[in-house]
Amino acid sequence: MTNPDTRSFDGYAAQQAGATLTPFRFEPDALGPNDVEIEITHCGICHSDLHLIDDDWQTSEYPLVPGHEVVGTVAHKGELVSHLELGDRVGVGWQCGSCHRCEWCERGDEQVCRDIVETCVGRPGGFADRIVVDGRFAFSIPDGLASEVAAPLFCGGITVYSPIRRYARPQSRVGVIGIGGLGHLAIRFARAFGCEVTAFSSTPDKADEARALGAHHFVSSVDDAALKKQRASLDLVVSTVHRPLSWKRYVTALRPDGVLCFVGALDEPLTLPTGLLLAGCKSVAGSQIGGRAAMREMLDFAARHELGAQVEVLPMSEVNTALERLRRNDVRYRFVLRRD
Image (cartoon, rainbow, N blue to C red; front, side):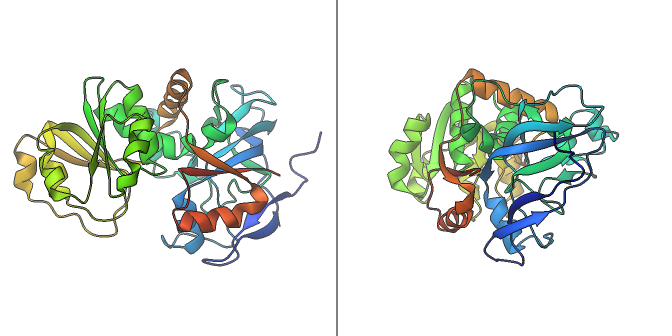
């Protein structure tokens, strides 16, 4: 067996902001007592990978190996890793480490730990043949989930599962804004929760797709008259989009105690009259990924209900083709790279 501390990894990296990815060989971190080395078979592509490549968040370090929806098998493990065995199929998402000591970690909200370790920020990510991460953030994948449909669950899936888990009940009426990489998973999860689901999109030709994904209703997000008709009809609205919309309409669409939750970041400030929130005790919230317990729960839920992402699989060597098409929104609904 290859010594994990004496070999190089091969991946694809951007050498500067906005650059095309090129083959890149790098030395991995030494395997710590709680770490695992994963031989990667699949890695999903997220819009966040584009933001990192372009340095939109001013956090990128180059050369940059993107990728944070990782699926593979455990090739090596540290001496303190007891929950995984060599050969186990596991996945890793946006987060691959935390302090494990703060109040947030102790209560199971590792995703808000101040010492969060992000899988491809300041360290090589999953567009590679292998990766080394804290084994406590490597999650066993249930047998019922194929690797290619499971990969996007580790970022996109947990991102939309978390607010549904927090704010919805089986009797809830849930709206999902945007039918894309995040939105199509939100529709599937909300329907599996037993909720009545309304899909909102600016693209009319997605109406049939939304219903096929599980939506009971479809509403144009750019039709003000149609939005007015949604008044006091929804308990939770999950926004997956990155552009401004008529947010007053969506708050008005909430029932008492309803929540408008953002999982997509807006480029502009959010402006709302507080009176709209006071009337009916409505809330505006944000949500990001989820802690380790939520991740395990989400994977079990997805396997039980046979849920996964709708994907297009490409060889990892065609990563630039996938990234360019993603920039054009030319995918239904997630790209997944399969190692050549």
